[in-house]
Amino acid sequence: MTGGYRDVYAAWERDPLFFWEQAAQTIDWFRAPTRIFDEGQGVYGRWYADGVTNTCYNCLDRHVEDGRGDQLALIHDSPMTGSVTRYTFSEALGEVKAIAGVLSSLGVGKGDRVVIYMPMIPEAVFSMLACARLGAVHSVVFGGFAAHELMHRIEDSEAKLVITASCGLEPGRVVPYKPMVDQAIADGQVKPAHVLVYQRPQAEAEMIAGRDVDFAAAVRDAKAAGRDQIACEPVLATDPLYILYTSGTTGQPKGVVRDNGGHMAALAWSMQNIYGVKAGDVFWSASDIGWVVGHSYIVYAPLINGSTTIVFEGKPVGTPDAGTFWRVVAEHGVSALFTAPTAFRAIRKEDPEAEFVGKYPMPTLKALFLAGERADPETLKWAERHLGVPVIDHWWQTETGWAIAANPFGLDLLPVKHGSPALPMPGYQVDVLDDAGHPVANGVLGNIVIKLPLPPGCLASFWKADDRFRKSCLEEFPGYYKTADAGYRDEDGYLFIMARTDDIINCAGHRLSTGQMEEVCATHPDVAECAVIGVADELKGQIPCGFLVLKNNVSREAGAIEKEVVNLVRQEIGPVAAFKMVIPVTRLPKTRSGKILRGTMQKIADRQPWKMPATIDDPAILGEIEAALRAHGH
Image (cartoon, rainbow, N blue to C red; front, side, top):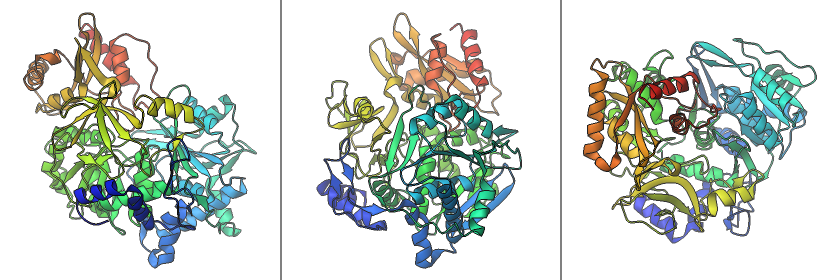
């Protein structure tokens, strides 16, 4: 598959099966697939239906067998502990085999589910790979989830075992993890037979006799007794690799199921062609393994590709300052950095003139990739100006596992349009439809949908819930997967993702995009970040309300800035936006992965009942939002 983007996308359109057959040749198979796509399997068909492989083998064993065992596989950089630890592919393989031996001795085998509730430490990554080695199905639960949410995930997956740590580390505090696990198991109906506990010196956990097992001691014992020579379990390409429950779910969790074969083929293709990363390059995805970005681009894609991955335990600011990202890039020779726009907004707020950038030479950095939420143009321009490398927005979802639309740095860099993740990747035919399922004209806001079948790497279904998957994702627009994102396509085919479909404001009959208004607000030189929500209005149904966080170095009157922002929106979008309510706040409520909790803010504004989101970073911020709204008479 050579050539530029247009040629490669056209090759996929001409012969999708041949395209993905070629992509699969970058993977090592125990039995190569002969049925590239079986439309009779699963909900919408299955990829590489008769292929047999193992994901852990492709991440570690094959690189060691190819003579690259001394290459660095993983760098753990922890500003929280002031330590850096490095593992070669051979060393990582040794750790994974030993953990697999421990899991096997505790009764875990092919098809069993294992919940992993861990901070950003190497043992978390090795535990994921050990599950993959055994053919067990892991379900990583982000450490920000409370016991109730963890309980739901243990119950829904019917986990046989839980792997956890005694604690996680946040700036200024130690977060106990083990008590959350104890509470979740005590409250739930499913009782895992064992809990494997990695004790950290910052806070050792109490152990329950007969159930809890010390992680480090068990691994040492496995090595000493020779129980660390666990071979990779052959699995079908269509067997599940993991279940990932979507963030913020309440009630019945929604578990995205990822398979083995299609997942590897898609991720391998993306590393080379989207990110332009080669074997031996250092790739850093500054996310968390609890989210899909961490699964795809901290753990699996870099290692499948033979690249070095960085596991970072810290924050973009405060550990110790707004220069920590540049320190990591410079110190470890990072080739490509992938993070969320929120991280850059935080850095920009703390260091608006990018003074820290100049302190760390970064000759190896070739590109910055942003995803996970809408990347506002001002943040993109700031990063471009100060980093001097391509800044590439791309769009995807937990459900897809890799980019739906991107600017493929590894093929050829297309012209950048700020605010757009560029063009669909091979495998994705993306259309924009109105609510009745009819195509809309270029420039018109609509529902963004993907023609079935979804490409390799996308979810097969929801865990034990095929009907729910059909009903929520496939039924509304027959023949398509509903992304639940709203946006439009321009005359060049570029996609603009403006909001979730339930974040569209209907103001006096006009469908307005909150994302478009946020874009305009962010252009004001004194605004660090912003959020626009729709609040109830008796006359117009909904009206927009903007929350502004001002930069640290701003000394002007907030009232003057508010008027200027209102005028900006009026000039750029027009009076139809009805944008008059602006509220300055010191910070915005976010999940621990950095997504702004606009839905919860809207419920507070409308005085509707709301629940504390399970993934919120700091619950106190919601009280600040409520106080700010009431002070403005809303």
